[in-house]
Amino acid sequence: MIGERLRRVEDLPLLTGTGRFAADISLAGEAHMRVVRSPVPHGLLRGVGARTALAVPGVLGIWSAAEVNLGCIGFRMVAFPQLLPYRQPVLATGRIRYVGEPVAIVLAEDAYHAEDAAELVELDIESLPPVLDPLAEPTRFDDEHGTEALLHDGGYGDVEAAFAEARPAPGISNCPAAWSGWPGIPG
Amino acid sequence: MSITLARIAAGLRPDQAARWGLEPSLAAEGWHTSDHMCYPYGLHLAVVQVDTETGQVVVEKLLVAYDVGRAINPMLVEGQIVGGAAQGLGGALLEEFRYDDAGQPLCATFMDYLLPTRAEMPSVDVLVTEDAPSPRNPLGVKGAGEGGTTAMGAAIAAAVDAALGVALGVVELPVRPEAALRLVKAAGRGCASEPGGA
Image (cartoon, rainbow over the protein chains, first blue to last red):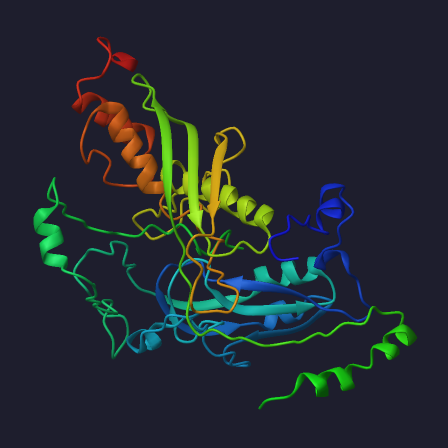
């Protein structure tokens, strides 16, 4: 078995359009969820107004972090303890960090009413200026932390000698792009 | 704990296998957990063509070689590497998540966020080796999923530099056509009459 070129069993249904996905499944009494996302890049969340949205027919509930505390999204494997205060909550608590950040969820009997109701949820956000340049002078992140989350100094071998011998002499300024793991299409 | 072969043979009861429609055999199961990643190593080669009038970079050929320790399913490993190479090409030439001055994302749909398609992908030669099994797990396996992506940006950037005869010309990804065109001009490879007549 190990080392064999085994074909994937899922390819035939996927390539012939007969695969089944979560959206194809319909169960009696199931609810559909729509996420309400922040329209602003940075701010303080003052409140979530759900009264109008709750009146939409078929809406079962609207929850923000005030109703359900889902905690923070954890790190996968490499975790620096200094980064723990910067973890993103599943639903925004207090601080809005980017356009598209989940602030509340709408649960309804069907996807259409969930979507309609989500547009009626009123977000009370005190907007703050966004921080766009990762190389800019660090500023405040919250009351206790700055935007410079971590200074990491690591290496192995004779790093200085390697740099001294390198031709042409390298100077690396690394500014990672939002390329993998970005929030996708807001809305 | 040790156990004699005689004891195993006595417990095996090969005569019982027929009752269940099985071949007489001896099987063992084990568990292994790892709390650390197992890194593979490899190399990326890229051949590119730079249009000196438009700055468009076309990747003509890619090669990715990776030592994955042990390929459990070599076909899937090769497929992962080719898919990873496509992602790497996207990061090197196309994909960028940009924001306006107010912090609003400008690339929130696939109309604005360019993904590589079959049209941008050249054929990829893949060389999977098993010369250095990981000592960190019983099978000797190492990561194979992201290998196709890792050095693609550097390989394509270096290929653009080589095509234009400049050193450390590309210092930022993705290499958009306007950036490649600046390098073309800096390298003195531009056309006598510039596009657009500017």
